[in-house]
Image 1 (cartoon, rainbow, N blue to C red):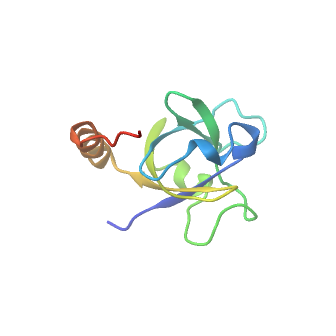
Image 2 (cartoon, helix red, strand yellow; image 1 turned 90 degrees about the vertical axis):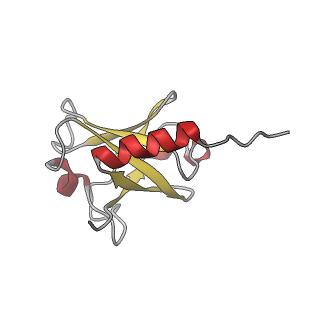
Length: 117
């Protein structure tokens, strides 16, 4: 199956881009109470909390990425993505299928951790 990418925007309204690193898992949750966008998908980074939204405007969705509107009907309430690229204003993340998410988490838990000195 072809990879699906989304852009996370609105970073500066939360913690900025400094909290992101490639390989982190993001939780995507439909924001049913959003008054401005009926297809809003908020982005959470545990344990920090909300860090942005999946881009849903022609002005914010980069070429090659899906909009929140396009992604919205592909999952029930929660989906997961892994951070692939980080810029000053946008994070590009790859959507994980349920089985991919489970495998990814198991591999991350078993992988040796790097320690900073």
